[in-house]
Length: 428
Image (spheres, rainbow, N blue to C red):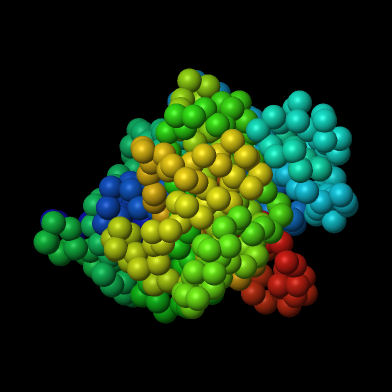
């Protein structure tokens, strides 16, 4: 494989890298952009995405950031005749609590929401929810997309604008007058020379950063999901993405609970589990599948080249997540005793900072940039993230949140204290 000389090398071809390359090529008119990944585009963590979006966040900065990204998704949907199937069903936040003032206080005032506090009205509007649900907050600006189709659409635009991609593994980076990237592809080694390097390596972003002499304040946490064919028609096809805001016990029998308590590795399942179990129909009005998720894992993982061998994968997760979802969507209860015959159990890394905000901007003062830590919100935030990264690289105007989403925030002690004091980090 011959050596190459490019202006900008983007390392990573998931949501973040493709979006950065798209805005560099299409909006900033850069003609020499090379997208490098050892895998096919969108085939690692991005392939495990829930493909949801929302502008509901417990901080104004993240709300503004995702609002900008949804604006871009809307634009691309119009431009492409909605090739990536963007919907706008909203998000339902369901709770058994009588008072939702604390929850409502975390929602910026200009977000379009409806609050339902009459249980009979809730049952009419959202019939799948349990009768014990006392309050529902419906976030209007939310829905889902096909992330794979969005990625493919952007790749087509990148190619048309002159951008290229290379399937290869970056093994080392050196800096002299330019960056030299050692790349192995198909058993052959080559050197890519680049004026600018963009670290969009997802769960491997810390590894690439170390090649550049920088330590990133990120961690990888493996989160799982399941999707299954809803042959019982338990979930209405028009149900919004629905989230249980309450912590819960999983409804084990006394015998099951006793067995769990006796096992040190499983004892935690007998106790109270955190909020956040969620469900949505998948495949549109004519589809039959549903997706369930619950980001309760807190253990850090070293990213693995083959996620199928991830040690953190939990074979009991399908039962746990079905039990959790059935606690607020009771029509799912039959699947506890008789699991769906057709289902998919998968997982991916949430690469995240402590405050669960992304890192987008200069990595150093020599021409290296980062677009990473899009933990669990890569599909919804990739457009704004890629646009922001391209603006940093090209010296364009930055949004008000630009500095706070970069490494510069690590020097803002007041902001970090505020974020670290918050118990709600918008993690789903």
